[in-house]
View 1 (spheres, helix red, strand yellow):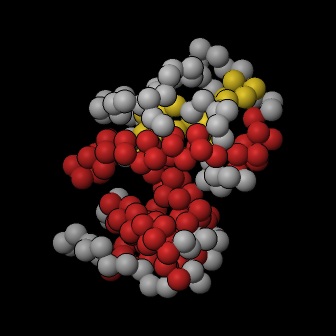
View 2 (cartoon, helix red, strand yellow):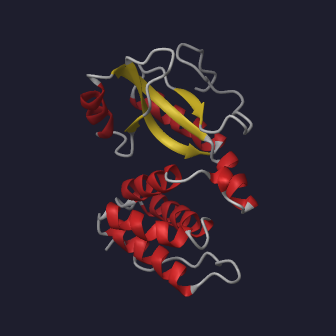
View 3 (cartoon, helix red, strand yellow):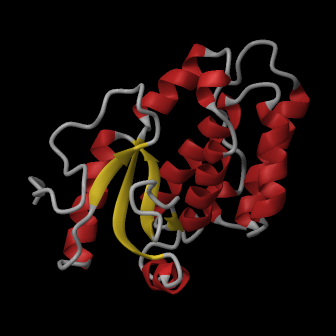
Length: 201
């Protein structure tokens, strides 16, 4: 098992949160460490029924630990967090903390786009550098093309870091930042569409 997930971190569960939810979230982290992302997702969904923030807190802390220690489980943690956050609408949740988290972590970085038919192969190329990359939905204005999302659910500060990292690794790319929820403030000072000049160097 990966070092950073040897024990589930204590992130201070909310009052009244049942032990079963904490156990499910902890088991989800263990599944991530073992590479079983499907089972991890199922466990996080069980925990979400009690407190949607519980899996988020555990995953965020484990991601920070993995980054600090250079732990290779980092990629799976980021995939698990991405999949969890994509699995429900935060603005349909009664907890204000969930909605605030969604707005704070509203950015994603698009590294490239390609024709729908070519996109799966192009994604494989990107996954060699960014293993948590995924294909986005085709734009309504141009449905023949699909974006390659390098990383999702970022703060504006983290989105800027990804832009810098991407430009260093792939100087010919023209990445830009998108937003999941249009009712949240957009990131300032970043390119937000293809071809827009990038003020970040």
